[in-house]
Length: 110
Length: 113
Image (tube, rainbow over all chains, first blue to last red; front, top):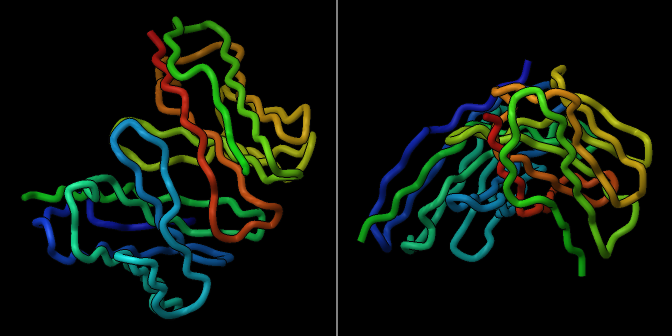
């Protein structure tokens, strides 16, 4: 089967750094993606890791270790607008279909 | 530029009634198309995906079906809704054989009463 584990909630203060971990079990692994979803809105793409290592996009970075079936999303210089749910998703085949984790709700406090 | 449309935005339907949700994509050709459902406070569950006209793969056996009558049109249907069909339905697209980004539509919030 396929499964992903990520923490359900994380709280941090404005300006801080937070790391959201994701572990997965899947067959036919192609890559790990991260999506952000604000309350009531649609998910938006943040990053993708197809190979081991760190990908950096502005304040957000994502890391993948295929041997450990593990990845994380790192958010730096947190802002209030970063309060949202964050989903890791495994690309489980070359059709592009994604298997999503249950999501981590990030609350940023002043 | 590419855009994705979904309608309606919200829908309240009685148990046992039919359902038809439509999704269209503009500005791209031969996209991969996906239907997801999200229960309140939960992750996204992939329901169907399609890599071409008339090609539908079902991920979860249930009383829903999908069709792709045109290249950029994806329809989610049900003959008889169940209470458990309530949720947030999201359509998404990606480039053919896309291995990274999926682009989501605004979603339809369905309440079955």
